[in-house]
Structure formats: C-alpha cells, structure tokens
Length: 84
Image 1 (cartoon, rainbow, N blue to C red):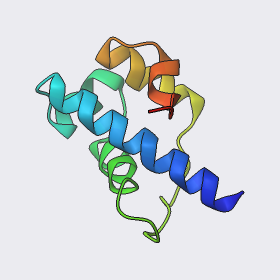
Image 2: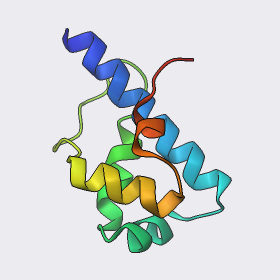
Image 3: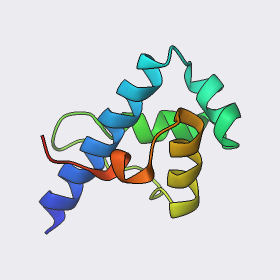
C-alpha cells in the first residue's frame, strides 16, 4: 500500500512539473497564480525523485490541488490520473 501511494505521489509531482513547464511558468509564477508559497510547489515537485526518496514533509491538500489545477487551466482529475 505504501509503495503504491509513493508511486502516485511521484506521478502527481511529475505531472505538475510537466504542466508547469509546458506553460512556461516558474515555480514562483505557479505559486503566485495558485495562491500558495513557492516552497509548496518545490516540495511537491521534489517528491517526484526516484523511488526511495523521502516523502514530502506535508501532504498536498485538496484545496491546494484544486488551486494548482485552476492555475494551470486543467481539471483536478488530470493531476491525479496516474494511468500512462
């Protein structure tokens, strides 16, 4: 169960980073648009590192997930869809 959760967190982080870069946004730009701190974005994206990397110190909230999705113009489900 823990391994599956870690894989999903890495997939979310990778997706956020890709969408942010596709939109030519810095972490600070995305944070400003979403109304969160840049450290929230950096921490989320860091969790995309290889298996065995430390988990983020805090889990992303639904509020933050919705803010990020809106800031990037996507449906929140697109951030969570880990099917490739």
